[in-house]
Length: 113
Image 1 (tube, helix red, strand yellow):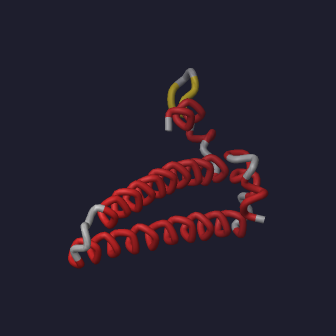
Image 2 (cartoon, one colour):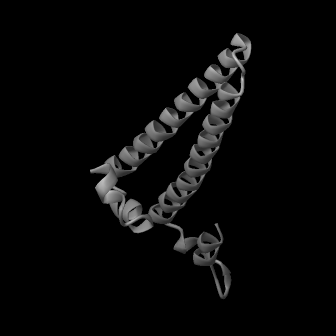
């Protein structure tokens, strides 16, 4: 976020001529990467916690069912994260912002092509 602010604010303060579509979509892509990474990490933690709950349920069906529901919800969340990243990346690529995506993450070409 601060890197974006430094590119917008020069020595003379705010310069609106420095804001272009590439910078805006670059910011959107960076925020999306951070948010999806954070959400993905949280989903993995939920899977681990639910797995431990399932193992330690001691044969109690209600606790096992609750742990299974948590695991299923976390897996669905991970699928949504992956699909949303793919959707937004494809949308940005379709709109012609390939350079923005590849500048933010040079290895992305191997993932999305």
